[in-house]
Length: 125
Image (cartoon, rainbow, N blue to C red; front, top):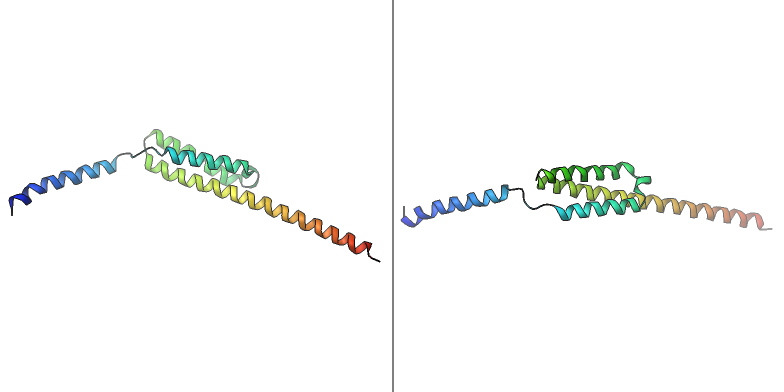
């Protein structure tokens, strides 16, 4: 083997080891994901998710609480995944709440239309 190859091997091993150690670390805190999840929960609450979809909203809140505990233990990767799931749950709860409110509004409009049609029919000679 060439002497250059023999010298590069230890450097390559050291470089790969350093890269693996860096990847194995806790990584960055998922503070932005925490803000997104909490903001999504607030929006869901503003959309009356507590009334229309409380189970999904509670699930999102529980995931945020669990993620905060993981962040305290520096399990940032797991916390990040939980926070992403929490944000999706909260957004889904908000969307379902808005859908339910829209469906109720459409049903009310349709009821009013039927009442007006009935009044028109009764007033015709």
